[in-house]
Amino acid sequence: MISLDTLNVLLDISESELVEELMIALLTSPPLVLFFEQFPAMKRALLYDVSRRKTGIVAQIKNTMAPPTLAQEFSLFQQVQTCSHSAFAQQLDNLLIRLNELQSPFASQAQTLVSHADKPHLSQAQHTLFLQRWRHSLTLQTLTFNQQLLAQEREKLLAELQQRQTMLNQLAPVLADNDTAAGRLWDMGRASLHDGDYQLMVQYSDFLARQPELTKLAEQLGRSRGAPSTPTEDAPPESIRQQIREPDSVPEEVNGIHQSDDILRLLPAELATLGISELELEFYRRLVERQLLTYRLQGDVSHDKVKLRPPHQRQQQDDQPQGPFIVGVDTSGSMGGFNERCAKALCLALLKVALIDKRRCYIMLFAHDVIGYELTGDDGMAQAIRFLSQRFRGGTNLSACVAAILKRMEDTSCQHADAVIISDFIAQRLPDALINAVQQRQTQQQQRFHAVAMSSHGKPGVLRIFDHIWRFDTDLKSRWKRRWQR
Image 1 (cartoon, rainbow, N blue to C red):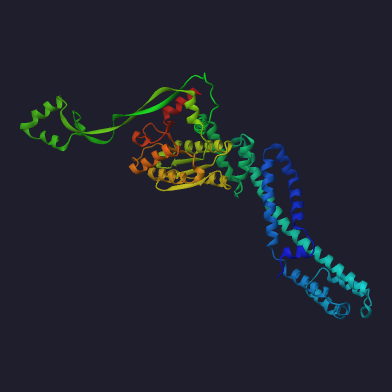
Image 2: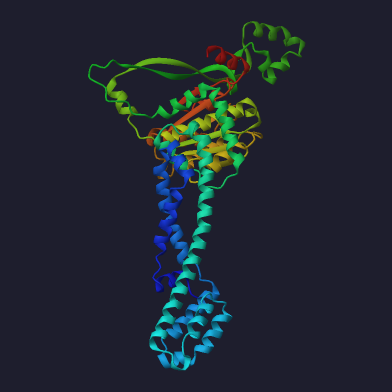
């Protein structure tokens, strides 16, 4: 068998020129010209993508085998080409028969050339003309086969471009606010999708437009590591707000035994004295004096404290590079309904921030297990649609999510990552080893952990590990309050 690349080389056919002509014809097609007029920022990304695709098409042509009949005819041509004039004249009849058997397009033309010649006295000029016409026919057949392959690739590429064009027409107004975001959005649409898949993203984009607080929250998360301009010497100190956590009597977990009058938390030994008539009066005396032994349930309460920070300290602490977003989304049953839509819409808003700031964006869904998606990869649109299609149900395995985030942060590309966990934080406390690992990342690697709490009932003991706690209550009262403030 002969490869198509070998035929192209022997017949002086340049597949690079053929591919170049194909791309020029494609880029000048009316649909793409109109598309570039509508989205000028996409042209640069498309040209880079076309350059990459040209290399792939040329490589595919080189690895394609020639059709069997064409390969056999070319081998016959090579054999005849080396024959002497007398030998060629002797095997001319057999040659015509062989061309007819191969159903060669040159067979009828060869018969015509031979019929005009005196076969016993075939001249050298007629011999040369015969070989030239035959070579021309082989070149034409090879070009035709090349063009068939390129036509198939053109249809594939055109279908892909039309699909990505449809995606951009729908999503560019939502996710692409600048040239950088538009180019990255183009790259994320390489995976094949159905026409109706984008509607899911459009629906959540419409929901996000009705919840401007989520967009504002995503922008604040994106700026949390941003570097401000260098302050002047006479710049006033900046007032910053910190959350201070202190022990409180919030019932969360058993923290020892103390004396009180809390009957609901009596020790069994104290409760037993109430059933003994001789000790009943003693029980009531101790109750009045709050001296009964009871379980102590204690949690944490947090309050804000405002302090001033000098300008030079503000620059030193905030001037840090921006890494990827690693977003953990709680998909437990308590996060269903309105919480689910808010969590998905917030992830879409974070994706928009990541596209604008040239950041990567990972999503980790956690319930019993942890499922990861990368929304800014080559198949980012397919991953995003798969994520938005998920349903929230099951339990809450916050420990597995934090462990998966820590493992992702070990990658060198996630050195300055911002971890964001979206949950109602109605979950079990994290193991001490996991808490220590998070604190090590915060202090040694300068990686930040953000909590987006969608419920006011989240456990303070779970939230204590986070650098920032962003509140977005989704109860009916808070929703009406936000709507009223708009």
